Amino acid sequence: MKVRELSPAVAELDQAPGYYGRIQTRLARALLHEVQAAKQSIMRFPLAWKPLPGGLRSFSLNRFPYALIYQPSPEEILIIAYAHLRRKPGYWRERWPGTH
Image 1: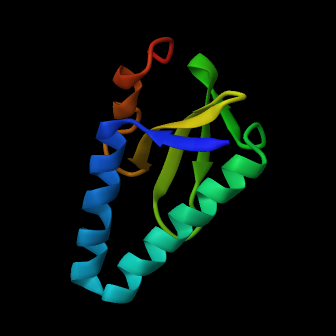
Image 2: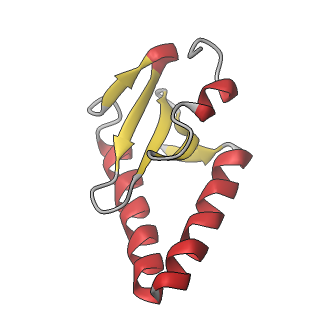
């Protein structure tokens, strides 16, 4: 199974380590490590995480206020957003039909 990301999600993930890196370099690396571990967990158990409207799911990170919003299918995991949980809740819904 492969993971694919929408371009707005890629942009979100590109910005987050920069913010944490300004605080402490270790934090940026820790965030990226946790995101990679989350992707691995999602690939192993795609239906195990919190269901959302529109056939989406949410995997919340432990150490950081982010959730991976994704759509599982038999062929791939599509990452819709790396959503910051404390900024503009639900902003990513406009990216996916059926979540409004």
